[in-house]
Amino acid sequence: MSILYSNIIGQAEKELIILHGFLGMGDNWKTLSKKWASVGFRVHLIDQRNHGRSFWSESFSYKLLAEDIITYCDHHKLSEVYVLGHSMGGKTTMNLAILAPQLLKAFIVADIVPKKYVPHHQQLLNGLAQLDFTLISNRSEASLRLSPFVKDEGTRMFLLRNLYWISPGKLGLRLNIEVLKNVSETISEGLDLSAISSIPCLFVKGEKSDYILETDYPIIQHHFPKADHLLVPKAGHWLHSENPIFFFDQVNNWLQQQ
Image (cartoon, rainbow, N blue to C red):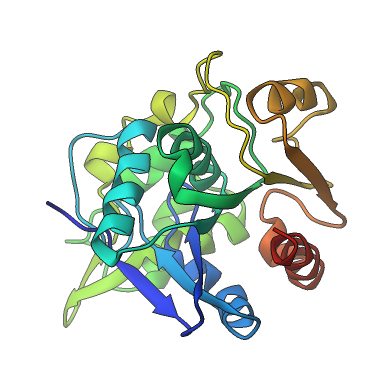
């Protein structure tokens, strides 16, 4: 049985699991996790399968990602957890609410909804897949070789946080890119129409993001009738890093009331 890697921050009794987005890792949330640890939570920054320091597998689906969290909670003897998931992590969280409602106290979904999206990651994946670390010896070279595929420097820097030194002078990726380059359709999947959960939840939208549209709110309410909603101003899809003070304060206010 494989257990997901996590960085556990804090000693409080309330358990908060944070699930990163596609091609990210738990450490993307380290700054905010320290703030939650200071207000009564023990925070589990999890790397999902094929990401970060967690195990690699050729199998990849939202059902498996949710089952990984159930296994993690069983291993650490966690119950009545709070879960916060961003993007892909939000889809994992929604599937977890359907699969194991008894496990969750409440959950937050950051800038994603339970609908099927048009796949749009393939260019990024193609860029990462062509990185040849027999020819790349530093981060600058990796950025240069990725730039034709990923024009935006901020996105490129985010992706290259996955670089690490396998050994002196030898770089690698903390991503199972051979598997992930083929999962664009899987990542875009929505929930089955019959999937409904009455767990208290909060859906958070970045004001400048198009991941949640006005026409999506009935879809959210169908699957999650107890959903509350929050708009983060001056932020796009990376709402937690673009407006972190507002995001933390408002999400924490909601969490503390659950």
